[in-house]
Image 1: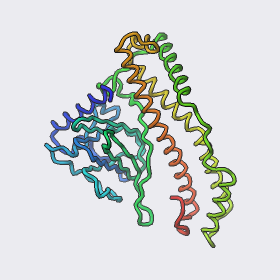
Image 2: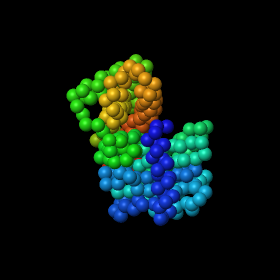
Image 3: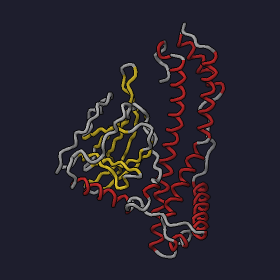
Image 4: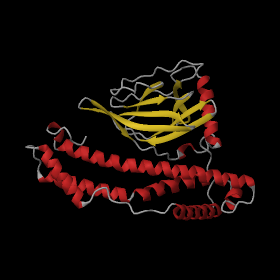
Amino acid sequence: MSYFLRAFSTLSLVSLLSACSINGSYPDATEPDAAKLRFISNTQNSTLDFFDAQHCAGRTTGMLNNSLMTDTQRRVGMIVPPPEKARGLLEVKLAPGKPVFMRINTNGSGYVCAKAISFTPEAGKEYEVTFDVAEGSCITTFQRLQRFNGKDERIPQPMIESPLQACAGSTPMFPKQIPETPKRAALIGSIVDTNLQLFKMMNPQTPVEPPSTPKSLEDQIAKRKAAMGSFTLPEAYWTQYRQNFTLLNEDAAAQEARTMGLYNEVLRYRLSVTEDAVLEQWLNPTDTTTRDRVAENDKVMAAYYINTRKSVMVEVLNHHLARMGQLDQRFEVCAHFDKCWH
């Protein structure tokens, strides 16, 4: 784990232990259609903090699973209940439609973990983020919750971390970006180009097979019509149905480009806080300190690519499910067919 994550996790724990309220400093959103988020931790000394341009030091939500403190009892009346084996949990309300930068931290015996997630909550929706430790690794899952026809569903959500540049230079968590000069721009550009070329050589792309082919789509439509029985839909519905799968294929074909775009953005941000002397020897380190920093950066970025690639795949699928759900809602399919998109 990087120095900044270790520093942040420790600072979060210390600041919370010294706070007056076990419920932390984050106030629930007051909008009537506020989104709701449940944080479940099955690890020791866990916190969930929120950041924005006005709160770069973060706002806390309470402590979970600490032997010296009582767990926060923050609850907001979520419809879908937590899993039976949840060790500790808290719930908060989020302003709908407003980007969120949240960070989970845990500081246990022999491990320190932190995970940041950037997302925009939808009005009235429920979410759940869970933190676990297994076989020496920290595991985070992020899901949207919903109840449909009496059944509770958990839909995986992308976990994309984007730099909170509005807070750059405010805390060790958000280091200050060094002003750009022609020299720095050239150095960073050269490093990024070389990094991307090497990355592509080590991770050769394989052609992405489209999720749907014309034949498989028509077969699916035929089976769906048969399953609907006497309930029929106008041709306009099926035209849009086919168009949605065309969009799915287009999004799937573009997912690697989106992943690399996010990778490029984060790599450039990390380089923008790096001193000139280090940038100058980045591609050919001549001292151990710089060599170690480059190696650590490569490790972090490799993990970022893997996690972001998975998240982009989830994002593509969720966009497709949302389009299909909107289509079925517009034609009131769920009122007649229990296997509707929703």
